[in-house]
Image 1: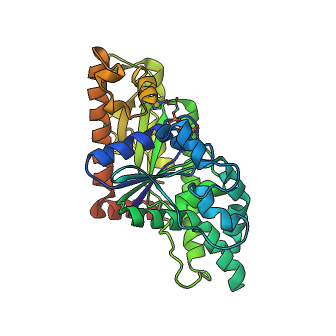
Image 2: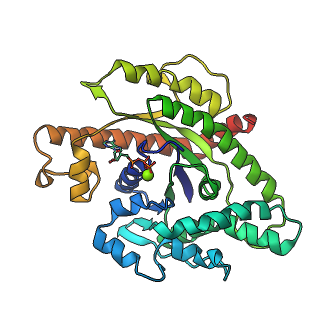
Image 3: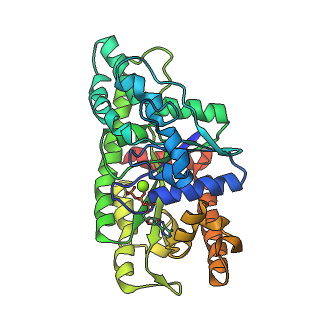
Length: 343
Ligand SMILES: Nc1ncnc2c1ncn2[C@@H]1O[C@H](COP(=O)(O)OP(=O)(O)OP(=O)(O)O)[C@@H](O)[C@H]1O
Ligand SMILES: [Mg+2]
């Protein structure tokens, strides 16, 4: 299984929509996919499922079919993870559903990070079981669904929950917008990822309980995806360009730790895609409960919309292929070398 987190501590940059659309695109390309909602806001879950289905997942007491149900024994210090029950959305596409109650795990995750360094085997053991809970839930769900690709959606922050989610990720894709806030977000993100990577490396050498499955904690940055809110007739407007042109150097310096060069956005190898803002398709897709590139005339995608559906399909297909190329063994080793130097 290969795990990819879509992460940026800047909110509203299209993370959840990207996970949703890529999960379907990878599925359409013939891959077995597991989508995992680790954002307590549970937006991914509410895009995949309608309210009736979500209501069934969230009865008043226990939630055995969500991520909360899987980690609840750890939250209550009553035992280890429960085998997750992923929801099958289509053959080869499943979801580990999110849960608003997952925020209750944050404090446990926070204290567990320190516990992993403890000299006492029992304390360290509890720390490792908690910190690796997301990894083990995903591993188990991916195994039962035969999933090769695991796509993780997280909330927009750099707290303990996202640290555990990212430690469970082999790769990271960074969605961003072309604005000052996204640029500032990159400046926070680079040192944070390095700190988490290094922190996990140190902890892995500690008193790990025998037989416990540990994530690699590599978090290799695959690149960024620019969500373009203002393309008109394929020509980016001026204010957009002002920020877009600064992203390549900022990404190289802050995320990869390398020397920035002066490339412009259109030729930056770290840019996985420049995604259009499909203003009218998105509400249509939400109503039809399907990805934008599955919309048909029966959903209202006629005339210009039909062309936009094809355009959208092409954009997501190129993005999906690019991600697949980069997570291939040769490329990931090369990236690993780059990141290793960035301390
Ligand atoms: N390519 C797109 N075309 C049109 N609308 C989009 C696109 N991508 C995202 N959006 C819209 O932008 C808004 C924010 O997207 P989304 O919820 O995916 O961002 P997010 O980064 O997950 O947000 P948060 O940080 O709150 O989790 C949503 O209303 C979504 O429908
Ligand atoms: Mg989101």
